[in-house]
Image (tube, rainbow, N blue to C red; front, side, top):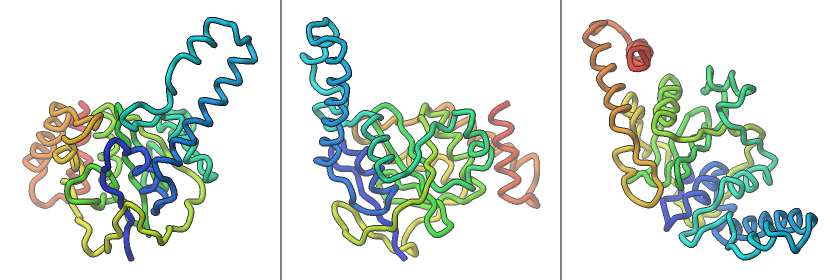
Length: 249
C-alpha cells in the first residue's frame, strides 16, 4: 500500500493540500486559477446587478482577483470550492454542529488546516492517520489515534483554522503528477513526537505559520512533569491525557 504526497512547490500549498486530501493529482495550479476566475466572475455579476456605475462595482473592476495573489496563494473560497466540487463537505471545527468532531476527532475521515497562506491536510488512510503537510522535510508521518486530538489542539494553539471534511472521499488516482507515492512501510511513525511535528521543519516558505514556541514548550513541560508525577507504570496514552490537562490549566 502507498500514500500519495505532494511536497511544496512555490506557494501552491492549497493545491497540494487538496490533492493530498484526495490522494492523487486531480487539481493543477491552472485548475485552481480557473476556479478563482469563476468565483471572481460570479462576484462581478452579483455586483453588476446592483448597477455597473456604482462606486463599489468600479472599485471591484479595478482590482486584481481577490482569490489568487501574484505568488500563487489561493483564497479560502477557492479551496472550499475545489473540495465541494467533489461532493465533500468542509466545515469549521469550531462550528456548533462539529462538537462531536472536536470531542472524537479520530471518528472523522480528514481535516484540512490553514494558517496565514499555508494549507495542510491530515487524513485517515486505511484506518491510519497521516500528516500530509507539503512542507515536511522528511515527508508525511503517521499520527497515533490517541494523539490526534492533541495534534489538532497544537495546531489551534498555533493559530491554524481547522476544517472537518465529510463525505465519501474519491478513490485514489493512479497518476503520479507532481507528487510521490510512498510505501507505508517507509513512512515515519513518530508517536508522542507527532504532537509538535512539522513545526521544526516548517520554517520554509511564505505563510507557513511556523508555530508558537511558548505553546509547544508548555506542552513539552507538561509531558515531562506528567512522567515525573505518574511514574514509569503509566501508559503513554494516560500520560498524554494528563499532560494536556496540565498544559491547559
